[in-house]
Image 1: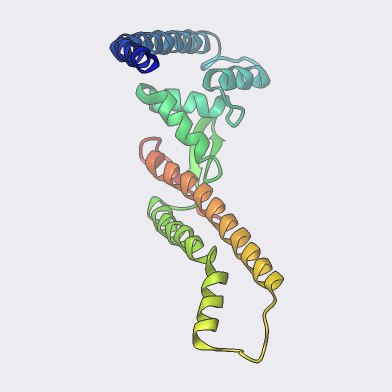
Image 2: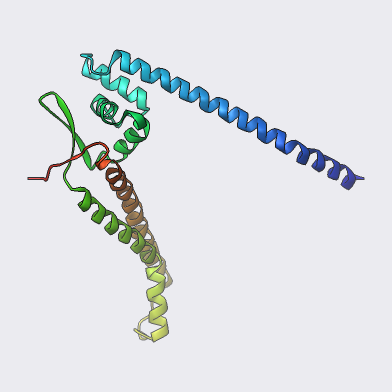
Length: 210
């Protein structure tokens, strides 16, 4: 009897799945539409009240940060992207924020420019190096276990006894070193990759360090 009830409930639930999915899609679409409409209002407000205006710098920065929902930018970057690449503004400003450690904003003769200390080709080479560095962390993490296995297999240092705590300590060290390398390599890769993608579109100037 219980099995029969369970089968009936399961049948009903299966029949309701398409309807539930349809409701979920409708809800998500309504949510996305509301999000984009609110973003449109925020863009209009910024263009009407702050873009190319003489508002106080602090007020413009706050308005720019509210527009892009990030404290990692200022009105200089927002105004520049609006001018140079308005058709994909939010995508470009997001990538510019990601690449903020590699692309700087400068002002010359009241004009905003983006500058980088490395060329696009140089950034591509650095990106390849970071890929290699990241992959190396995969081998660093199990390095302690690999070395112990090789030593035991080849019979090296047989007169000496390696305590268990020393093996654990070595494993923890390689784990920490490998993880740190992987995390930093990944963060730097994301920043440089974003810099490469927007280098030409945002007319970044190569200004070597003196």
